[in-house]
Amino acid sequence: IMKKILILMFFCSSAIAQIQVTQFNAGWNAANEVDWVGKLTDCKTISYVDISTQAKLATKHKIAVIPTIIIFKDDEEVARFQADLSFKMVATKEEVQEEIDNILMSDF
Image (cartoon, rainbow, N blue to C red; front, side, top):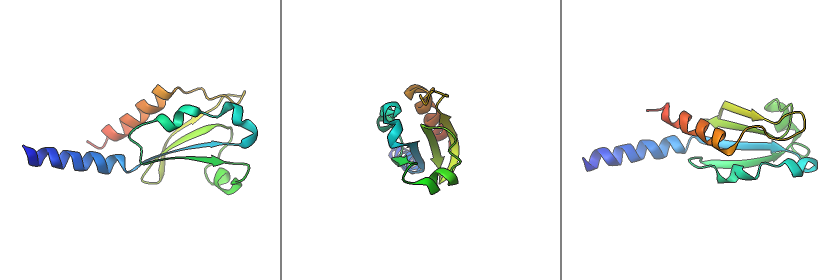
């Protein structure tokens, strides 16, 4: 039974290592920064991209409105959450975390 637990722990940790979350925003929109992104769990990395200084990344990921949160698995986009027209994030921390959890569970 211990061997099965260790195998399960390995698969869980390798699945977690594949999830990355990136918040795209800009310095001029700092008032609408999504401060709870850093509190998401089960992610390998959580990063921030300022599209005013990293325009190539904004173009690459087709950022149309900020803030935008993108969840990547194995460097491929699997989910996207965007702000409304007033530049405020519509999604809640719980909704984004639920999406991360669903992505992880889909591996099992």
